[in-house]
Length: 251
Image (cartoon, rainbow, N blue to C red; front, side, top):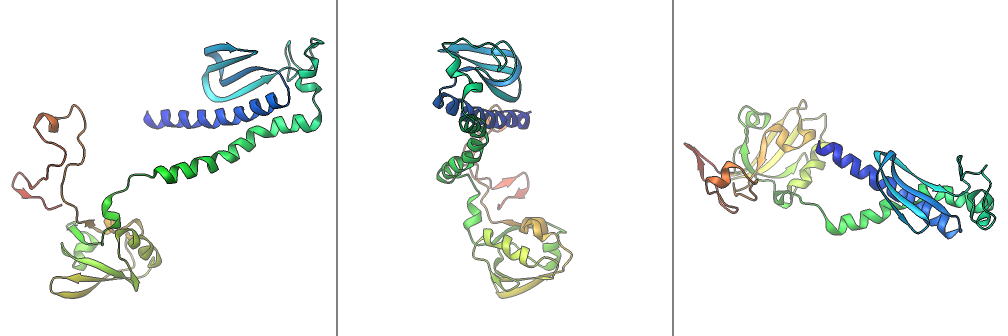
């Protein structure tokens, strides 16, 4: 449901920007705009502002800008125009102006990513903090490829098949470079430097987690979902989990 709603919102933004391009250039060229609609079909919300009716309609799969002298109907290009407004008809404008109005929508859609990307880079996105930490193993999944290769909790990988990996982020590129080949992990262990090898038939392209290596992270509560039993039990943000039942929790 959330995915559908997000898709409708994104489509609505694209349609709005597209139709805004037609609308703005039509106004600039002196064309009378009769309707500005987001969506098709029965209108849900409608308001007359100046000479233009602004609408939100029931089917959110597009939109349109209706101009005087455009298309069919009582105010279309074949209709008899009011002499006082004839000069504001889309059909009476020069070919370059009509081309500019028609092209404005797609051009606005092309410009939109260049407006959004700088904002997205400034705002950023939330990423796990461990990605910028050294790739030290917090947990080895039992019976995984990593467990069979001999990895232990506390191992810190610093090289993968000849490529230095100072952070967890760097391990992704190193694993891709080793695709289809045995992967040699050079790691720092308490009792010295070790080299462990995983055969070519592995799932490492999807990351270290896919072969059974999880990062060294303290089990600290970062956020609590509302109306859940954890809140009722008295758990708070920032709490560190030390054990669950008889099991000791380290990460």
